[in-house]
Image (cartoon, rainbow, N blue to C red):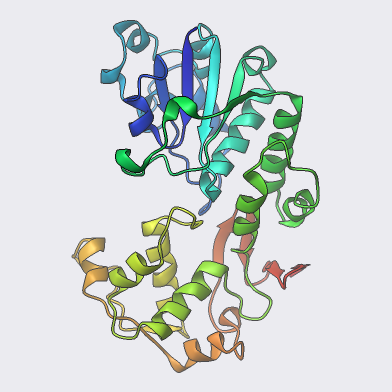
Length: 320
């Protein structure tokens, strides 16, 4: 049986020998605007001059696979999937990985012939953990992807793409049991909406609390104390959030080296020892609202959050 693995963490799986080819996806859906439809059409289409990183084939360690596998990488994604008897989805339980999974389920729902060969691997561990700590990959349970998984994933993805968070939170009230790791990931993503009390998401509040708790630590040290694969955001995304807290007319954080520095991001944050301002301390005490004094301009899924369009959770959703 010819197997194709699709994943968000490809390096370990690519060397596992479990499949003829392992294709990794590197979408970051948790921060920034979602890719427009025409960009995704080019991404999944045949190779025709797309720039680096703009085609599905750019994220595969082709040197690990056969000449025959490499020779077909100019095809559209669906065309490439054609010879494989099983197309396995290996996505971890973490928030961005689950968003990648539901994105692909929505994509395959429009290609029923290919979707009929899909299998879902129930990966409840970190695919990037040290090899000596990792369970045997051969023992990971895989189940057939049925209409239930396709419909659940597609509904959740389309809800995330909506212009308001309301469909996404409504989706959380539905039966998500066909995708066992989805609900916890969606709850974590929903917590990144601005709080009714502070105007900040869960990660921003955690950063302020860490700065208050670990006074004298470098920004890099704070990250190392707080980051895990369970987090919604990656390292650079967290540092971008920290920059946002130190910027604006009323910063919540001070003593953070500015992004205009010529240092690398690693050196800049290693050399920064952030402290809370009085305003930051008031935010932690839920006595001030960051958005009342600072501009908000960011994306949460398909929702463009601004001061005039600030959907909040408290914990229920509150309209702007």
